[in-house]
Amino acid sequence: MAEEAVLGFLEKNEEISDSGQFAAEQGVDHQELTNVIKSLHGFRLVEAQDIKRERWALTNEGKMYASSGSPEVQVFLAIPPEGISLEELQKKVDASVFKIGRSQAIKNQWVEMGKQFVTRKILHVEDKVKELLILVQDEKVIDPKDIDALKRRKLITSQTWKGYSLRKGPCYAPKRKKYATDLTRENLQRGEWKDLEFKEYNFLAKGQPVDGGCLHTLLKVRQQFKMIFLQMGFEEMPTNNFVESSFWNFDALFQPQQHPARDSHDTFFLQVPSTTKTLPEDYVERVKNIHESGGHGSRGYGYDWKREEADKNLLRTHTTAVSSRMLYQLAKDGFAPKKYFSIDRVFRNEAVDRTHLAEFHQIEGLVCGRGLTLGDLIGVFNDFFSRLGMKKLKFKPAYNPYTEPSMEIFGYHEGLKKWVEIGNSGMFRPEMLLPMGLPEDVRVIAWGLSLERPTMILYGVDNIRDLFGHKVDLGLIKRNPLCRIGIE
Ligand code: FB9
Image 1 (tube, rainbow, N blue to C red):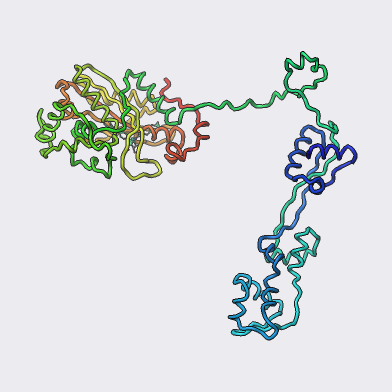
Image 2 (cartoon, helix red, strand yellow):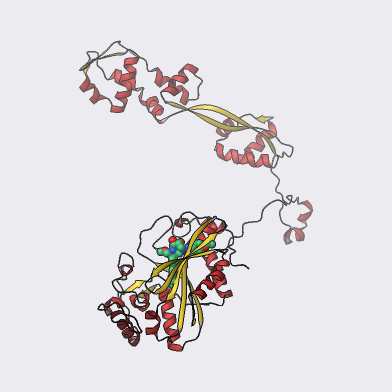
């Protein structure tokens, strides 16, 4: 419609001098006409020149006065010839109109505004402001001084109108030629191919973006950590149970029942189902004893251990709960040296902030063998973290309820040029290992870190919510580059 109107008009006329006027005459929307002009110009059927016009448009306040009169006239007309009390006058005119109209009417010397009483100073006034606003509304030209006065009162605002003037272009045709884009079987069979003109092939056109799935950034990094563990001969532990019993999450690790971490302020306990169904009773008995009265040279904690506390279901607070299950199973199946790892979600009922949520992905590794020492643990770290690019490590004594000795691990980050806390570690206590039934000389060295921290550092993410959760920008997820750590 708009295209035919433009090409048809130019067939008989030199030019379309103003696309705005042309759109009004043809009864088409100017925006639609603009799109057609851009396309015709692109294919050089027309030559389009930009036109820019400053025009004035009424503000909402201006529109209001154009229809119901300026506020000063409204106030003047509300004052009867004999005058009126201020109180009565304020009841007759809208408050905002009164406020503006009163000061303008005084400025124009139309009214005598006493403290209590108001009178007219002249008999009759003309509403010049209203007349001017109507002229602006009809796009009539008015004196620049009047424009300035209306602008000062914010009754009009300037708008840039963009349009085009058009002439025939070098490829003008009264009707746009349809260029063929494909040679079809029908064209060939019917011989139409002889009359076809093909659209030029655009070798610069980009291909359609190939849409497909992509790994979440965290999972890209998880994959790299998995490769590191597998290259080091570790087996993955089954972590597909977010819900765990307090027994495996705490008691089996020799973590006492009154430990603050076991409080509901730090741990998410389940209401349904609130308790675990089955536990290995013989093992539970040994755990109860080691907590209450110790054994194997340990004094224990000397408190009354409660089964109902161990039965409580929770969202696991660490993947060490999985490690305890694996080690117990290893003792039951008959001990053999093993290297296990896990990477999965853990949940803590703690205050959230820019870098911490109530859940994170814990990475945990453990090596069990006869006669392992702290030196072996440090050796494993040098190998593991050097694959992350961390070649300089430092260790700081720490405390965990289930490991002794324990160490915090620090690594020098070449990129950040500073020492970064990169994990926690230790040797599982005999009070944890021996009740499982592991041989006396078996030692287990273990360490943990998070998946989020290295990911945030590797991808320069400042706020954890840009990485994980319902506010993540999926575009960013799609665009995030490959993660290439652990590549020798
Ligand atoms: O991940 C952590 N830091 C880290 C790790 C790697 C990394 O890589 C570099 C870019 C290449 C950079 C940083 N941390 C552990 C240290 C801190 O971020 C710390 O502030 C936060 N920690 C978490 C605990 O949050 C409640 C990270 C998480 C953590 C801490 C300890 C363990 C697991 C996760 C553990 C353990 C453990 C100990 C003994 C035996 C078995 C497991």
